[in-house]
Amino acid sequence: MFQDEAGFGRINKPKYCWCEKGTRPSVPCHHIREFRYAYGAVEPLTGESCFVVMS
Image 1 (cartoon, rainbow, N blue to C red):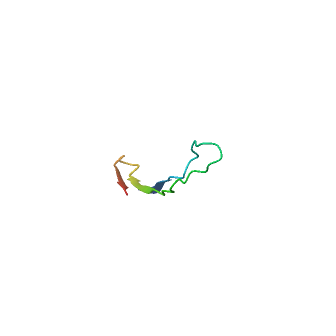
Image 2 (cartoon, rainbow, N blue to C red; image 1 turned 60 degrees about the vertical axis):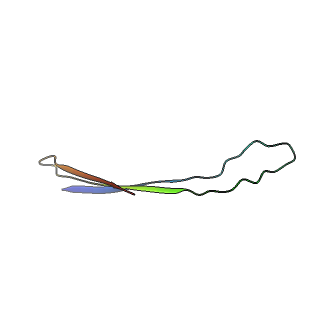
Image 3 (tube, one colour; image 1 turned 135 degrees about the horizontal axis):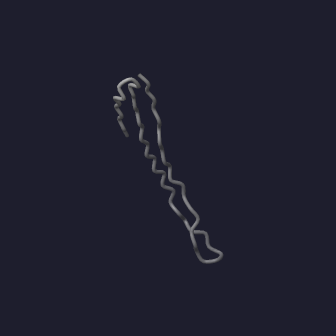
């Protein structure tokens, strides 16, 4: 039997925005962290497999 795991994540970062010349806008910084983990196992002789995705 073979098994493996993987993690997938995302973190938002603030972006530039348009404003009037000579002013500097106040943009709040929101950090959104989302992660998902995928686990899987495969039996090579029979081809039977099992996968789980968790947050």
